[in-house]
Image: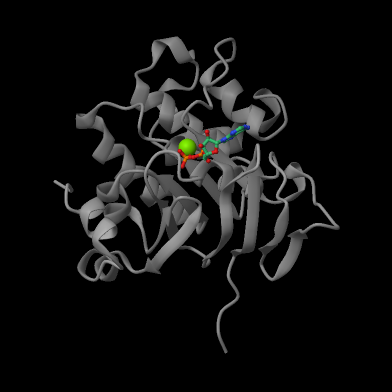
Length: 242
Ligand code: ADP
Ligand code: MG
C-alpha cells in the first residue's frame, strides 16, 4: 500500500487578467518530508502557495490534507481550519510584542498562560535566552528563528514557506536553513518550501517540483533532477549552483 500524502494538490488553476499564472499544477508532500517548489521569479510559486493556504482562491483543482479534501470548486475549509502554518519572507514579527508575546500569538493566547509551551518552542529554536527581548533588539537570523517558533506554535501538520531565507545575509543563511530543517524534521512537520534558488532546493528538499511559466515541468529527487534535467532550460537553471 502506498502512503497517503500529507498534502496533495491536484490540477490547480489560477489566472489574473486573462493570463494563466498557475496552469494545472499537481504536487504532493509526504509526512515528514520537504518538497521544494523551485522556479524563476514570476513563474507562479507564491500564487500556488497562497491557494494552498486559502488566502487566494483557485479557479479549479482540489487540495487534500491526509487524504481529506479541504478545498475544491464547491467546498472550502477556511485558512485557520487547514492545519497549515505559514512562513513568508515578509511575515514580520509584531514590533510591539516581546519574543514571548510573538510566540504566544501563534498559540492564540497570552504569554503568561502559555509560558511552558512558549519556553519549549523557544528552546527548540535556540532563542530561550531572548524570551523577554523585543524584535528590534534581535538580528535578522534571530527574528527568523522566533518567526519559526511562532509558526510552529499551533502544531501545524504542514508548513508552507515562501522564500523565508532570502532576507538573510549569506553567512547566516546556510546555518539558519540547516537549523530550520532540523527543527521541522524533529516536529515531523511536512514542508512545502518555495524558492527560486536551485542551491537551496538541492540542500533542503527530499523532492523538487520544478516550475516554469505556471506549469510543473519536472518532479523528482534533487539528485535526479540535477543529473537528468528535463530539457536545456532546466539544465541551465541548475548550472549556476555554487
Ligand atoms: P513567483 O512567486 O513564482 O515569483 P507569483 O505567483 O508571485 O510568482 O506571480 C506569478 C504571476 O502572477 C506574476 O506575473 C505576477 O505578476 C502575477 N500575479 C500574482 N498575483 C497577482 C495579483 N493579485 N494580481 C495580478 N497579477 C498577479
Ligand atoms: Mg514569490
